[in-house]
Image (cartoon, rainbow, N blue to C red; front, side, top):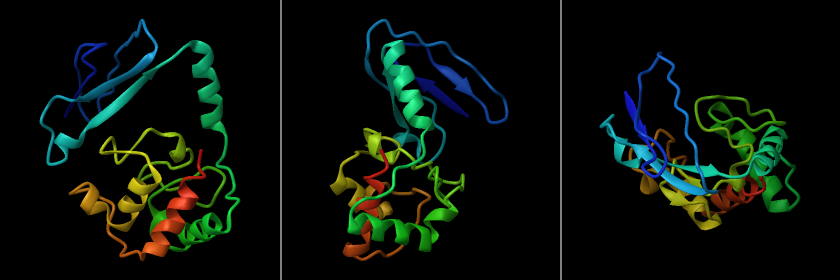
Length: 168
């Protein structure tokens, strides 16, 4: 069970696996609002934060269209090496990237990862350095996360990060 809450905008809404639920949230001002799970739901509960972005209808439509587009191809040599690593390693077994062979649904869809403000479900700002730290040892960044430590070298973590940073 989860209980999602965005204190500045809406009441709490309880969700139960297998039982769809809906809530109407209206933001009278454009902005970014912090939300979180307010019901203890397990060992990862303290990390359950999310951002709700409220913007004009026109800006939302523009964002929506961008989200439907496939991932852009990497242009630098290091990012191309990162894409090859992504496809050769177990990354494709958990993650999806539209327009590539990666189509799994276990982990987050990374198609537009570089356009996100946060990584690890809100655990850290989405910066190249934080992404490299995450890829190098996800458990050091977010204890208990399902993504295993693949024992990447610094070079491999940098190449993967360079590739993932092209996914805007």
